[in-house]
Image (cartoon, rainbow, N blue to C red; front, side):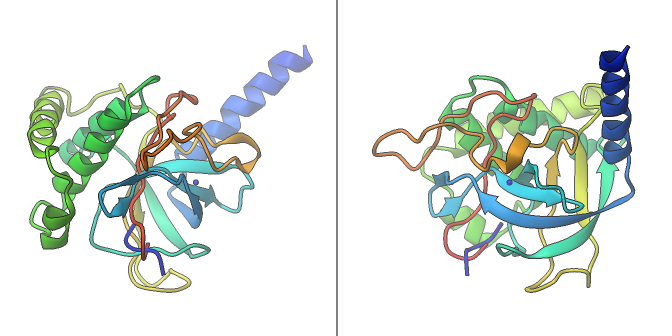
Length: 227
C-alpha cells in the first residue's frame, strides 16, 4: 500500500471446511481495503491490510508484496487468487510471510519480513530504497537468502496450502491507479471485522507486537500518507 490520500457438530465442521476450501480455490475475488493495523516502519504503514473478500464483514489481514502501486480506503477491485506452489518467487514470498505470521514474532521480525517482500518484488524501486529504515538491510539480505534457498528446494511445497497471491485485474478498481499485489490466507479472516489483529501498541512506538491468529497473526502494512 502506498501513501494515504484488514451429529450437528460434525455437520457444522464439514460445512466450515467446505466453505473455506471454496474460498481458497476461487479463481477471482472482489477485494475492498477497509482499514490498516496502525503499525508503521519508517515512513510507511506496514501490515496488516485489513481486506474484505467478496463483501464479507469479517476482514482478512493480508501482506503487501509490491511497493509501487496504490490502494485507498474503501477502494474495491477484482483480483485473481493464485496458489503459491509451483512459482518460485511466490514460494519465497510465502516463506517470508510465515516468519512474520509466526506466533510471538517480534516487531523487528515483522518489519524485516515486510521490507524483504517489498524488496523481493520491487528491488530497484528508488523510493523503497530511500525509505528503508536504517539497519534493516543486513537482516533483509539474510532472510531473502533463506527464502531463496527454501523455494529452490521446495518449489512444489505443500507447506502453505491456503496461502494465495492476489493479483489485481487492471481496470476493475473503483478509484485510483492499479492496486497492489497482496498475499495471505483467505480462509482465516478476523472474526467480527476486528481490524486490530496485532494487539496493543507499545508506548512510544509506531510498531505493534503481533499475536497469533490462525497462523496469520501479525502482518505489516504499507504507508502512512497515501495508500
